[in-house]
Length: 128
Image (cartoon, rainbow, N blue to C red; front, side):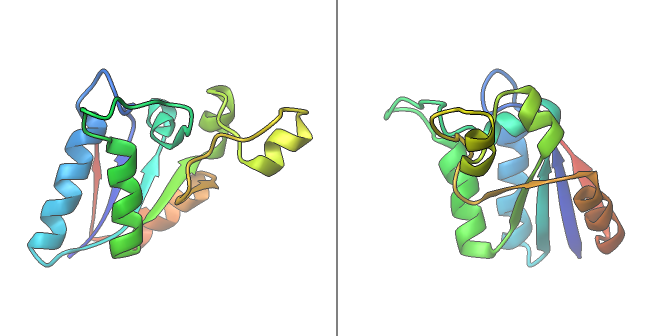
């Protein structure tokens, strides 16, 4: 079965993003396919490079990157939600005279059309 996920929770303070990652790992263990994860609203904070995780704590952002690298899962973040929360890639930062961007590697800016496409192509969409 082909799944897509919608993550609306940040990497801290709620269980949304952590639960989504754990669910993702279980999908692969059970032989299902996960084509994309769309981060929306507060969920875009999972792609913020400036979040510092103490070395003795689980690094959820790194785990998302690993999921992308190992399984080819697209990590799309809503560009509007990202801009509202100060997340920029290097090109957008330059346009706005910022010294550097803070979009984590492995994450991509996209619009709601990417979410719509994922919904159409998936058998199931699960929101966290």
